[in-house]
Image (cartoon, rainbow, N blue to C red; front, side, top):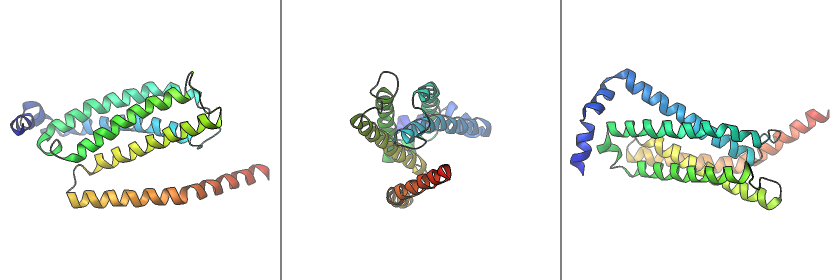
Length: 196
């Protein structure tokens, strides 16, 4: 197996991409653009379901899903290219499999969220439907947190990976503890400004 990975890493295509700063930089740029479409649109939808920007209607957000799926395919192609540059490093590291598993989970959750809140889905009409949508949205955000963290640390050593994972956990805990009071305070401030 390692011989195949070494062959891919030394292939003419991999060497061309590695040696061409333009092609390598363009691949990274497109990967980032795809990430922005994919994670940005799905996160925006999830946050709306969770109550952020309540004045924004959910139905028109479905029009952004073709861009979201385009972002996924851009990421899939550029991701394969980036992995093919150093497969002996990436494909022997568990972090890449954590990232890919989280992306798969996120994509399945996006489909579930879209079916629930867009088109003929139940939407947020009843308390039960709204609660179910919020659970789906929260799961989606958790998958993205794992995928982005794992993707970011693939180039790091194990101690740095563990430190980064710990920092993300602490940050997430702080956001879960402090986020709701801050949002409530912001809403009170908005209500006060609108009323006065």
